[in-house]
Image 1: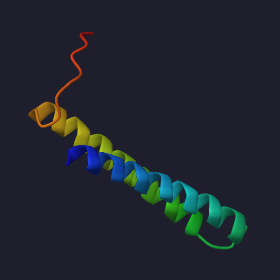
Image 2: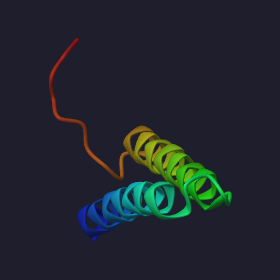
Image 3: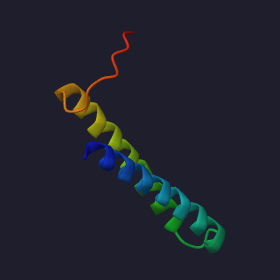
Image 4: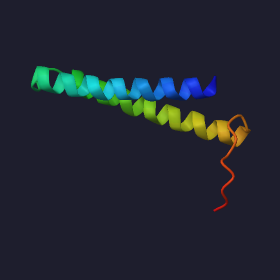
Length: 68
């Protein structure tokens, strides 16, 4: 379930990146849709990073076992 959540989140991030590219080409700077799509992408990326970090700290997501 957690793998499906992470893959779904990555798909959402890539979708917003594609939407930003589409809006940048179509709108030619006339609207703020490109900025909004990129802002959502950054927000989703930060949220996913924090959720994975919290999952690793709490033990829900096991580490890979490499020692640094």
